[in-house]
Length: 131
Image 1: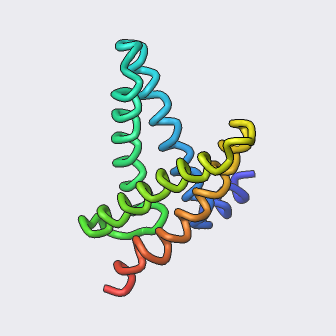
Image 2: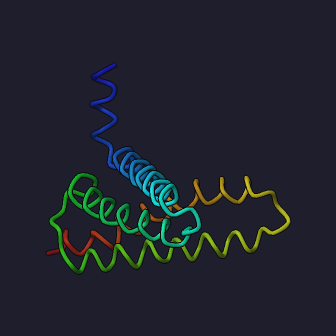
């Protein structure tokens, strides 16, 4: 089993998925923590969760997934991609008003990581490869 796990971890897409999963879990747990202290602070809870998860995700994606140096320009591109993904998820959900929420969530969970991986690979971190 260990050789299989080691082999899978050599795949960038697998590392990307793991890092994204941990970032999502971090966002969720921090939001719940804030809500346990301040039950009506949904926006604050998600802002805190998103902010910490974003920093974690940027650092892990940069160093472990794409194996690049931390750079302000990449951080800004990373932010643009992640913000665009958020807007895309809201837009897609608004188009699917006749569908159950589970369908909308599943579409976002499947489609957005694939799109963001491709954009990060060929835009966010591509410039660092050219340097």
